Structure formats: structure tokens, C-alpha cells
Amino acid sequence: MARYELLNNVAHKDLRVATGFGARFGDDVGMVPAFPSEYAELQREYPIFFRKDADGQWMSVALLGFEQRENLYLQDGRWNAAYLPGAAAKGPFLIGFQEQRIDGELRQEPVIHVDVEHPRVNTVEGERVFLPQGGNSPYLDHIAGILRGIRDGTTFGAEMFAAFDALGLIQPVQLAVELDERHRVDVSGLHSIDRDTLAALDGPALERMNRAGYLEGAYLVLASLHNVRRLMAEKQRRLRAHDATLSDGRG
Image (cartoon, rainbow, N blue to C red; front, side, top):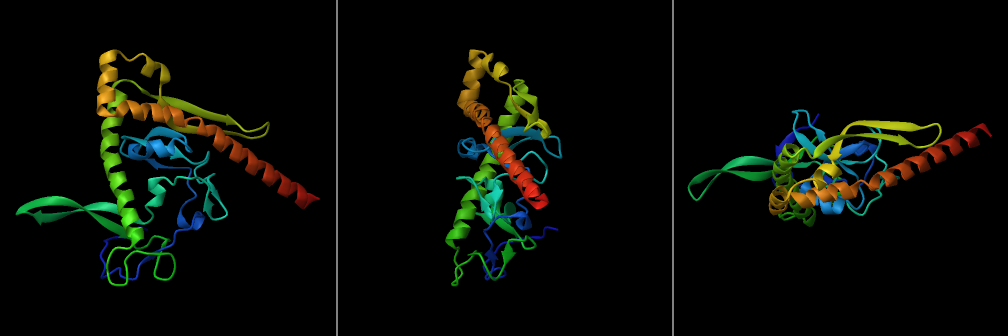
């Protein structure tokens, strides 16, 4: 159960964060949230799709595997990709808001919270959050940058997804993957940009999309879909390895 606390260099002066990867850290997930601020990096290595969140709002996700607890980028404690999605890179941290008086005016200012029950959090190993004298560590500065990207991407994304939806660009896709003659996977609930609908948009609609910065996002999502082949290849490799292990065991 998560237990978030407002991060500070007194209560959390000895806090460390383990930075390895694996199921024990909660990395065994089939998808993670994706933010438009990182689409350019994500689309090189991950398929990006849309789906509805628990509140019925559109969100985008990076697909990591074909099953709920399957992350095909994980292997032997490593994450096999040059770019780590922000939702994974942020670890036990999130941005919250605190009312602060600035120049005599009450404002909601962003502040960092930490989940002290997160399996990465400890006081023995990993990256220090604060320096011995109390200042932010380079690791915490890095995390702050990731959280700013997530915050900005969340706000921008909500507006972009609404624009996509209003234009009929978000359409369901059925991801039915034939891995071999014995294995098939179906991933439901995913949506993508409809290429034909995008191509049929008139000049004024395209101009509005471009001026708002949404058009690039649509094309990056489409460009990311070639990465489904990467996931298929890795899934097939693991199935062959599993079958070979079973065969050796029988032999």
C-alpha cells in the first residue's frame, strides 16, 4: 500500500532509492503511461497506444508486453532500451501541490512527494536523495526534471487527446498477434490514430492541429507502431528459449 509523504531533507535525510529493475520493484507490467513530452524518445523503441483510464478519460500508454504482468524489455535485472519511460524512471516519486504564499498571494505550488512504502525506498543501497549536508543530490535533480516533464505532458496530453477525439482520430485497434503455430495473443482496449481519418482532414483542421503542436504527436504515435514487431520478436525468442528448456529437461 502506497504511503506518500512530502519530501524534505530532515525526515528523509538518509533516504536512498534502489535503481535496478525487476518484478520485485513492480516493473513486471504490460504497459506504462506515456506522456506527449516524451513521444519523440518513446517512438524509437516502444509502441504507443491510447486507452481509457479508470475515470473514462483518454490517456496514452507505452506497450511493454502482450500480457498484464509481462514486460518484454526486462531481462536479468536490466531494462533493454536506450530510453526509460518517465513513468518507470520516476520511481517512488510524484508531484503534488501545496498551498504557498508567494508575494502576498496564495498559490498552488508543485512539490515532490515520495512513497515511503515503495520497494525501491531504503536507507542502505542505491542513489542518495539528499547530500550529507542536506542539499539535493544529482539523482533528485534528475527526478525533478522527469516529474516536470510528466506534469507538463499530462496537461498538454489532456488537451491533445480531446482534440484528437473531437476529430474522430482515435479509433480502436485489435492487436491479435500470431507468434507461431501454437501461440497467439490478443490485447484488447487499445486505440490508435486512424491514418485515413488523419489524411482526410481539411486544411483549417490541419493548421489548427499544427499550431497547437498536436499534429506532431499524431505522427509520432503512428511512427511508434513499428515497434510492435520488436515486441513480437522478443516474445518469440522467449517462447523458443522456454521450449528449449523444457526439451532439455525431458532429455
